[in-house]
Image (cartoon, rainbow, N blue to C red; front, side):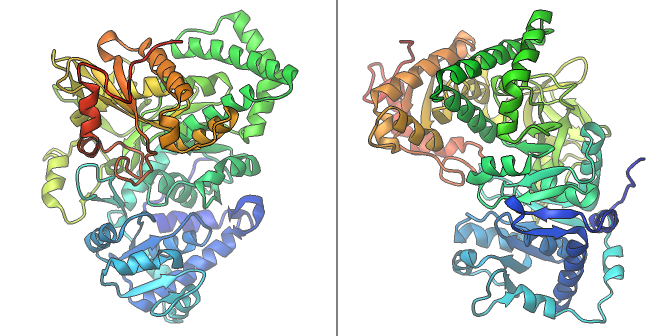
Length: 601
């Protein structure tokens, strides 16, 4: 039976909530808290009435500043039912950035947790109302008080039926790698086309289970854990702390799932560490054997070659004896498909999980395209590509290789920035993505890099820093972040930052008393391991791309900090300025202190 099509999120939600009202729509790990579709729908109605009582009308803006929690959903969806533009702000934004985002959005109401109030008040932004969940300090409203503003005269049906497809459903603020973030205006029509397009390629089922653990301001979380749920009826488990995701996966055993590359890389590193640290020798040997078979299988998949019959038989045996249990231990034994997106992922990482029997597809998209623009089902995917454009989207390449796309996913514009909107979308409706791509004869896309981030060396050779970085990072879990350098230079170098989560278990295993970044950056064992990893990565790079020298920085880089955006993209201009002295050392004729050259031991 085909899925009914709707043209606004409230219309879709009202249909979905009526399919099985007693089914659980939202939960926390262990079912500590649950919300059925009936309860969800009742709360949406009450929140919409309360917001209307506060004076919120169609076209007004409501901001949310909350962790991943069940309470978020009725508040967000309730605002949608008024035709309001409801959006999330990153919880880590400093007061000055909060002031910019909320001012640009023209937010009338902010709904937040008390822990975020000090920064919200420090922003000095003028707001009509602040609503607090959990408790309501002075000068704020509680959720119960908000709901109390609802009146019997409020016509809920008329309110949500008045919402139009071209109304702005949400604002997604870009990473801000080159200045203030821009608010992408995304309409109901954009999001409905997105959800139905994904469903057509991947296939969702009512009751499919998934987690919400990425920031709700991130378009990937909003799409997979909010809009898909409203339209297709998935069950969402809210995980407030991303560090708890591994345990949450075991609790939930999701049927569909997605994550950014860094999460997949951390899961890969955790598996490899677990195997190497297994105290039972016979069990460790069994795990090592199974992983070696998986690696052999994935090498063929990565090369686009058929898996030899004998290897397929051996893999089936490894799957029966070991890999099936490993997937269950990860919580992935029910997984039909998974996604990776928001940044490039090393093909070796995808191949690693393919070898384990976990079907992951790399996707490509951007906030200006409502999230996902190209994807293929894992059974059709090609490692190293980001699939094909969703049906209904058009593409073309400019002479310099930039991908330009046109179709129903393209944003309405940047909030309050008409000039920047015209720069992004030309008069014919083509969005200039800024990504350099290759497209093969069958329509599979391969993203080379951002147009503005390509390295052009002293000899005029164009190189992708992201490809260099991902190739090297795939060689060792110790590397948390890496910035490849070489623009206008005779050779490439790199600034390397250790992975904060891997550092502590590494130090413990090697008997090191200090797991801090400064201590590990000068530890001989760490330097040897990084050097070997860079050397291994170099073997998979063209000679001109190889890293000749590197420096391990005595710091960890945190998402939302100076060097990395909240969506895990490098702020390359800021890195170049902040670490100018370190970069200069890398290009001195003699090796400066702390500068290393890759070598195998």
